[in-house]
Structures are given as C-alpha cells and as structure tokens.
Image (cartoon, rainbow, N blue to C red):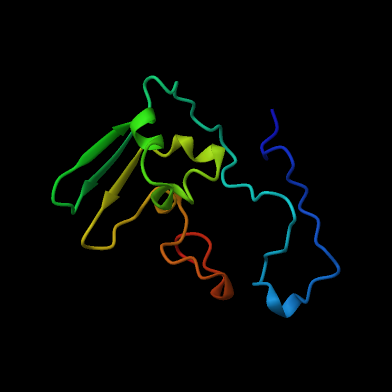
Length: 120
C-alpha cells in the first residue's frame, strides 16, 4: 500500500504566480490529500453525530436525523463524502488542540509563516 493517497501527484503548475502561493505550497486541480492514513468507515446504521462541550445541552443525531436537518447547516460537511468520519464536534470556551494539532500540526498553521508542524 502506498504511503500517499491515490491521485496525489505533487506536480507544480507553471501557470501560477509564485508570489500568490505560500512558501512550500503549490496549486493543484485535484482534491487535496487530507490524510495519509486510512479513513475510518462506520455503517450508517451505527453512525451518529454529537455536539457537546460549551453548549446549553449536548445533542446527538442518527444518520437519518442528521440528513433531515436543514441544508444550511450541512452545506460544508455534507459536500464531502469523506466527511462521514466526523462523528463529534466539541465546542470549547478556550483554545485547545484539535484533531490535527494532536497529530503534530501547528496550532495556527499560517502558511505564509511556514507554520506547518508544532514547533515551526
């Protein structure tokens, strides 16, 4: 099995103004590689989505309940089929490391400052 996801070619385009792209980055027409690891799969009969943390009351939806929510709420999550692995959103009052930061990515990740990984 390849370390990098299918479709990732890493070829730089020559028709892009390099001053418009952060250092070490490049423009691609492909869907970006969001993870080099496997995407978890959960059967929709067992899938749920939760919102908890700094809310009046925590909520949970089954797949059918989630799909019945107004589309305005689902516009971004529902667009990517790969987003089905998102199962919980925890809201906090203070900044805390999230999924990517707990896996070594920079807390702010400003590409113009080349902040990619913790310690950059």
